[in-house]
Length: 355
Ligand code: GDP
Ligand code: ZN
Image 1 (cartoon, helix red, strand yellow):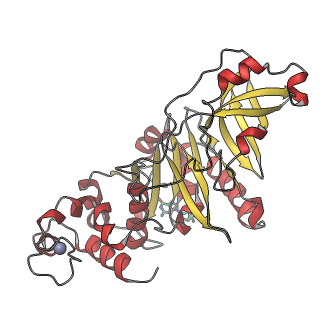
Image 2 (cartoon, rainbow, N blue to C red; image 1 turned 90 degrees about the vertical axis):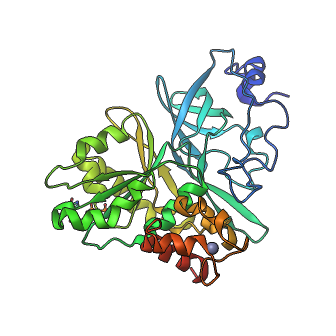
Image 3 (cartoon, rainbow, N blue to C red; image 1 turned 180 degrees about the vertical axis):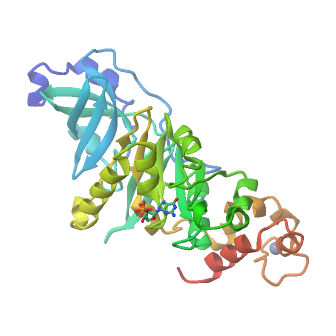
């Protein structure tokens, strides 16, 4: 029998069928990682999509997620939606939908709807939360175009270990990175360059900025426009100030939402994409800080440092730890200035110290 909503004629069964992935695609293992390096082996992403033929279904973007309710931005406004029941199969293993997911929804009443299907994800940032029975994959954000990492050159002094950790997460989850070195007005240009220039040389996008002097803000705005950005960085680095400077009020809004949810119970975690006037969205992702490097084996860590990745094959021993071995290409690389000492230090700490 059709569920009551369908029998009211809101979504015909034909349109439903056409909007679905082929049967069995939402297997319980959906989205589960099967290999430690999705860079080489992307997470399971559905290839086939059956586009809806019916006009009853609207394409949209999930811009807010809270306790099983999703706000979906469609061409004609925002609908507050739940997932269609059959989509929930397999939800014990992980989130089925998250902010950044592109979906098809069926409007059921005024501002309400049901999510009928979720489009294949290009990428996502997720974490595995331990549960009494196995693990649950929590999606922090789906389809981010970039992670924007904001660090201050001073006040607070940047913690390069934290930055390197974020970069490993970005490498591991295959998300492009933009590093913002903020508060350059507090230090000399030489000082900030010594801290951050080598990241630019590694291929990461890098912007030096100052809110009071409005330096770098136009470049930052350009980098944000038209993209879904996940924002992260230590508190006090200037994230809110930067957002306020490129779009008045934006930083303040995000801060208020983060504070109200951060203090709530564990179960009321909400996340949100904030629209940018020029197109695109920004999400604050405080959860990124707590992300453990869960599926990286210690002996694979060097593979997430682009400057080491290229050299490891030249180490004499294939299981080289790059600490004491003779003929180690990484140690030589540090001596020859190919690897920045601070990056090597991060490697050693992440590999040999308890997190
Ligand atoms: P958030 O915690 O990362 O959102 O940081 P905030 O935006 O709240 O900024 C923390 C403090 O740093 C505030 O007092 C800001 O006024 C200050 N601040 C932010 N950006 C700059 C900057 O470029 N230069 C200087 N001198 N101060 C800044
Ligand atoms: Zn080595």
